[in-house]
Length: 94
Image 1 (spheres, rainbow, N blue to C red):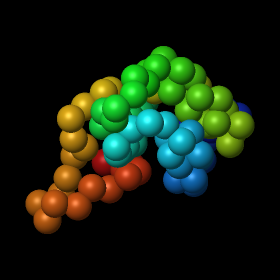
Image 2: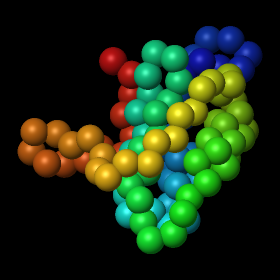
Image 3: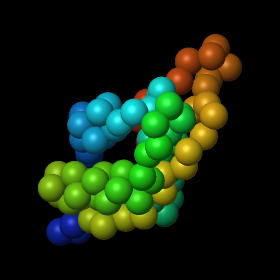
């Protein structure tokens, strides 16, 4: 990811686990894109404030040294899976 001070930085997946694991959702997935991060949240039984999720992730990324980027939370019915049916939690841009 872009570093706040220039260059790039690797973000540990635990940054996302810290924010997303406590949420009342069934599953989550983060995918880096060329212009930000897509965060897929599989609906649970309780509502989730997507803008609060985006703000929390943004704060954690900034604390880890990342530049400000677009964080786009999406409430979905399921996450993206591989051909074998596995779901990767955190995916890098290609």
